[in-house]
Amino acid sequence: MRLTLISVGRITEPFIRDGCAVYAERIRRYADFRLVVVPEVRITGKGKKEYIIRMEGQRIQGKISPAVFTVALDERGKFLSSEGFARFLETNSLKEIAFILGGPYGLDEKLKEEAEFRLSLSPMTLAHGMARLLLLEQIYRAFTLLRGEPYHK
Image (cartoon, rainbow, N blue to C red; front, side, top):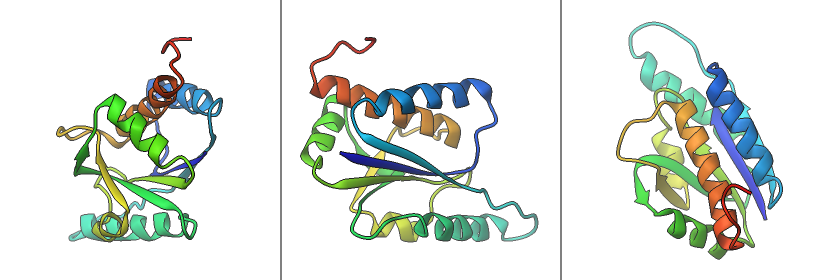
């Protein structure tokens, strides 16, 4: 299975950055996994939020390979239990999957609309670094569930 996480911005908090590194390495035991980070757009002024979301969306779009199954992280997406998420990965295991996660202002609506699946991690608003960590942890958890392995092995 080939998985890609395309995310916006570097993580500055050491505890989140370290956690992401741990889970990314654990995921690589089960799948061909890569993390692609596109730079945040930084501007000031009126209308900046919409501009930033659009520009970051274009950067993300440029990193999505053709014919890849895209999963947009969206607070209005589908909620899955950990077991449901594991089944989702198993069902799509023959596809290359790209998870796309926006920056601090969110993900471009065009990317959400074009995605094959919209996934919500929580009805709460999460900092994008925390969302990245949570997604990586759930991907790792899904693989351990599918293999019947104890989680903290």
